[in-house]
Amino acid sequence: MNNRYNDNYKELTKIVDYITETYKYDNFKILCIHTNKSFADTNNMINYTINVSEKYMSDDMSTHTGDICQQYRNTLHNLLKEIFKV
Image 1 (cartoon, rainbow, N blue to C red):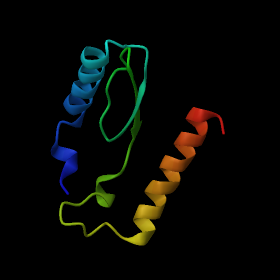
Image 2: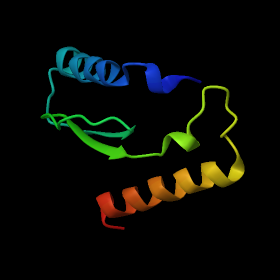
Image 3: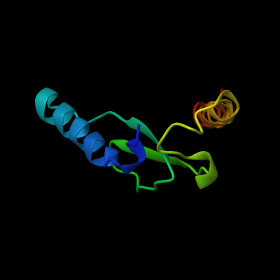
């Protein structure tokens, strides 16, 4: 809950750093899908943004209903189909 206020991008960069430093390997990509946040792509991260109206966002989980969650899942499903050309 309240994940939209966290700096998840910073955590993703830590994962990239961990992989490259621990395994001495940098030929990989992480697919990052953000909600209402935009970031530039990097060598190891491909960023996509799903824009969601504030009326569907809540801090108290009041908008976590089947209908709203299904809309988000459908958007995510369609984005992944487009990305992976499925």
